[in-house]
Each structure stands twice: as structure tokens, then as C-alpha cells.
Length: 210
Length: 216
Image 1: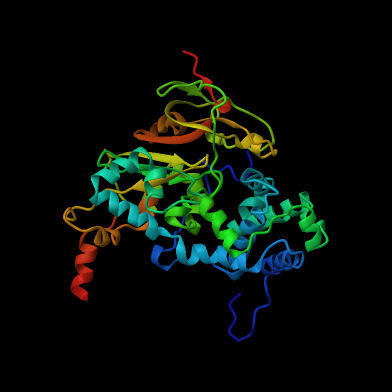
Image 2: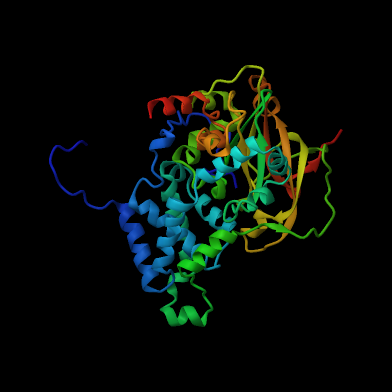
């Protein structure tokens, strides 16, 4: 119900349950408050999709790295310093004009944390998990992504500890761009496969405005 | 188990309604941040593994699982594990120490996150299937944890990659850490979903005990 007067909402049942659990664990000395802070801090400020964008932009501009990435993604990205929880084993799948890749976890929410951070709400949602495997084209349409009829779609259901990252196609007209500039075209969503990388014009427009 | 979490191919769940990427916060409420950190921190105590933790979230009435938000399911899972593992029954810090409960500080937690938990294990037996082999996923019952989705049970596909021997989740969820060969298996969209799915395929990671050679 909408409220038109000012007041402080009482804490929700969930807030209370989580607070109770936290207090109990702290009181028993079973979790360390600094560790709790450090854990959320890591995913809020250190580990996120900029890691994945770095990997993709490097693959676009460095053919040797791209080859290494497609052969053994786990060690190729470890060389860049990206390793850890929910990124222990990695496979990179490459988009091409003939084939588009899409990643899902139908059973829970497996996602390459080391390269993309924590998954967005939509990735963990029941409709995405249900539909990505059976009707990928209608899922892509919801993200505004239309592919030619002739493009095959490969869906990767992350049922093991192998994590998947999509290598989007490099946008036309960016062949001579440097890595740093290319990174700005790599959205998180393009590395899950629900969108394509942003067109070169996104940056040209931004440059014109600044 | 084919629980409420096993969602591949389900109908009637509506649109996805994604938030725009640039506007989405990492957590949508303070309690989400807290249950996230608590789940990871307690996981580091080594009293349960990732498969036990997944199974704890799955063992719910499907209606509850679907009605609750993502992090609410995490909360339910953690409450269940703490109860079942009797962790909170330890009286105090002294007892934690006596029972060798290692509680990481901030630096220790960061190290654990950075090293992760690799599941690759030494091969104990030769792989039964080679690349290109045709395999079938037998239908199965059982209330235990498994990573074979319902939608692929009874279907046939082709081995496209062999990832080596990895911790087998069905056993790991019972506290038995052992390895089985893990494969990437490709299934034709058409064979899973019908003729509308021509030109689509689904790749699923499946352990050897989930598979049988397809009878020719």
C-alpha cells in the first residue's frame, strides 16, 4: 500500500532473521566481523565485470592471447591475475556470424565471479533459468537482441564447476582500436550472451559530446 | 531430486524484466549484503561443502523455493545447515578452538576467495567415453542432490569435451568427496524441445555416472 506520510518502516521479517543469525554467529565467535566486511567489499569494489571486459578486449586486440584463451581459459586469465572462487575452471566460448552463445545455470546461479562479479537478479530469476535453454531467441528479444535466422544458438547450462564466458564479436570499425578503448564496448550482458558488444558509434558519440 | 530449483524448460514463469545493467545495484537491501557475507564466511569454516549448501537450498517445498527471493533461499539454506551441523550449539570461542574450528579474519577470508575451491582431481580410472561418442541420460529418481537437470533425462547427445575427473556432486553432497569423469555433452534443441528449436543446441556438463552409451 502506498503511504503518503513520513515514518520509519519497521524492519522486515527477513532483516530480523538475518540480523539474529549474524548476532548469534558473532557472539559465538564463529564469524569475524572484519571478514564479513571484507567479503562484501571484495565483490562490491574489487571483483566485477571490468575484469571480463579486460579479457575480451585483450582477446580482440591480441591474437595469441585469444588463441590461448580459447584453448585453456583458466590459465590464460590466471596469467592476468584473475582466479579464485567461482572461477576455478573456465571455458570461453566464441561468438561468430554463424553461431551465438548464451550462458545460464538452470539449477542454481553458477556464474564466472572472477570475471563478472556476482550475477544480476535477472540471471538468477526463475524465468531466465527456465527459458534460456528452451526458448533462447525469445529471451534474447527481451534484451533487445535480434539475431539473423541463419545464426545458430548454443546455450551453455552451467551444471558443473566449469564456468562459461562468452567472447562477443568485435564490433565493426574497431580493428585499429587499443585495448583500453575497446573495453568500453564490452558490457557485462554481452559476456553472458544476452546482448552483443556495443557498436563503435557508442564511443564516437561519447567523444563528440565531451 | 527434481525440486523447485530444477527450472530448465518450465513454462508460465513470465517475463524476465531485467534491470538496465548500468542501474542495477549489487545488493537490493542491506540484509542481502549480510546474508551473502555470512554464507561465504560460514562456508569457510569447512563444516559443509558447496554441494551440501546447494542441497540445503533445494530441499524446500517447490512453492516456497519459487516464492522466495534469491537471497531468501540462501538464508533458508544457511539456517538449515547451521541447525543440521549443530554449529550454534558450541558454547563459545574456547569450544570453537578446542574443536579446531578455524575462523578466518579479513586477510584469511580474502585468501580463501582468491584461491577458490578447484574440483579437478586425479584420474582414478580411464574415461569411458571419447569425444564424439553418443550418450543417453537415463531417467532417474532419488531425493538426493544431483546436477543432472530433469529436462535432459531420457535424452541423447554427443560428447564434445572431456574436462577430466571432477568432484562428483551427488556423493559430495553426502560428504563423500570423490571424483568422476566430467564431460561437456551437446544436445540438439530439436530433440529436447521439438521442431521449433531447430538450429539451437544445449551444452550440459555431465558426470560419467549420469551417462550410458547410446544403443545403436
